[in-house]
Length: 384
Image (cartoon, rainbow, N blue to C red; front, side, top):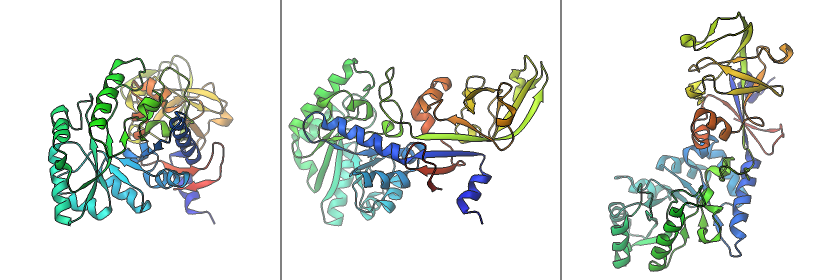
């Protein structure tokens, strides 16, 4: 009798394999990069957007086993989901304290990243209402001009430390604007602003470095590093060799193969026209699964080490590929083709879609059958 996992794989139009061992190894490598400066620096993990599409509820516990002690997400619902599988670890919510959610934070033991005085005042009021001190993170905006305490509000904190009464400061943090560009002067400017604030506000750990920021050197590491994208294999050093291990392989199943005569078109709008007699295979994923429409006539999949160009418009559920040069024995209905993996990384696919690896990863479809393994090439794993 087949297992439920076997049945799900058999029914799937596409299969996403996630290498938990590689994610853990990437975390260790980033942690060790911080320790290279000669002093202890902690390394958190950013699990927002469902751990960049890889599965927050699976990746979080795996990193905790590896030694990760602190976690960041964007939204409170992500934090509540993570709390179910990590009952003890600190979990920080980057988007802060929405009005009316104070009791949710307290109930689930979550820590808001406070981004302005209004959130600070509301969280202090909650501490008074619950009659106990509450943990908080203060986010200083040093140049992003997005979330965080601006210069005036930050100075108000420096001048009036009493504004923090009733709160336990878990962290001071800021976010780098252009950490992937080491020569960009904004990095040094932000570092100087953050240092000045931390010096004026002693008493809590500090955190500035995101994935790329870790590679700017020890000056940026402070007490806690917050890698996100690099954990999942996205290159934190654009234009250089990627120091991170790949973490995902995406395979789609061939649903049908047909022969198309020269001058016939394929797909909506006749966007691709055959210049010769062509074997066309249709595979079971589309833009509803995060395979972007911008990839029309701009990408390639791989079958038995052979490239097969993507042709015609990307449909909601289907993609057509030219398998004329692929041996028929390897391009039959039911066969799997590599969409992401050894031949094409998320960063590579992002270049073709004119976006970045972050968007490719976070768009990974909910309809994929997911398989979790503990090492590249290890076929034995947990399926979901």
